[in-house]
Image (cartoon, rainbow, N blue to C red; front, side):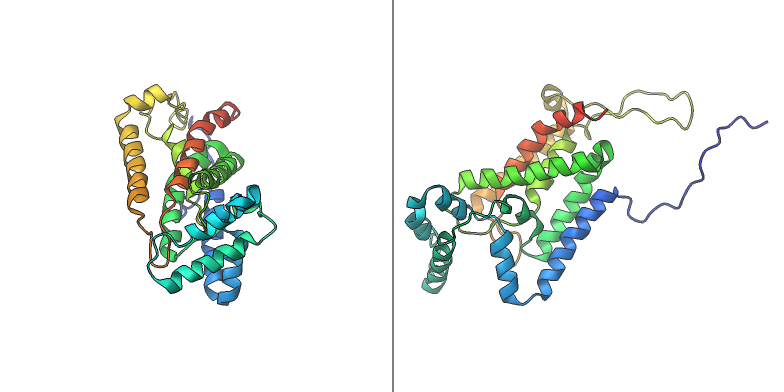
Amino acid sequence: MDASPDLPPQSRVPVFNLPGVVTASIVVLVAIHAVRQVLPDLWDVQALIEFSFIPARWTVALDPSKAQAIVQAATEGLSDPASAAARQDFARALISESSPMPWTFASYALLHGSWMHVILNVVWLAAFGTPVARRYGAWRYGVLALAGIVAGAILHLLVDPLSAMPLVGASGGISALMAGAARFVFRPPPAYRPAMAWQIAPQPRLETITELIRNRSAVLFLAIWLGTNLLFGLISLPLGAGDGPIAWDAHLGGFLVGFFLLPLLESRRT
């Protein structure tokens, strides 16, 4: 008599073994950028103005006296008179708007500066969004990513309030997922011997800050991440052709929120 359990039949292994919500996120980001490539230039520029996050728009809404400072800041670092004049005209158009467009605190994450920008974000999203989605499910994955996106925009506004450059990219949300994943993916697996061959070991708990400091893999990851973003901030390194400098402050805002918000999601997981 066969005493083995009656296990369900195994299905074929999928080519891309990603949680559905991560796959959907990637499809949305790629599809939006693909559509933008075929839009007329005027429509694409309008979409950028309507949905990107622009700190100067909020600064002048909160303090109209900053309008002239915003126009002057638009020409910083530019030696070409034509480019400087175009930047000033754009800044004047922005500060003449009556609405600060609050949805842009989140909608900017749906836009990207180039295909290279999209590809890099998709790779990081697949790598760090997957463990978060598997551990917490689609809703908590979405809450963490959205919180990181909004926090990234807020910190960018606080750091560079006079900027009229549009902020785009999902990096703030991805940074939140990275920080969240770092709380548990580097933890050594528990010493566990299942009573039955088909039983699965329990998921490791989140590491405390003290435990993270003692975890060499986690410390190395955090050091590389923080060092890379600091380097981008110091040298204003562009991400690819046609992109502006990387918004390191938006990355940092998302990362901090993800790191400290995840324990709250963990307490409601079960």
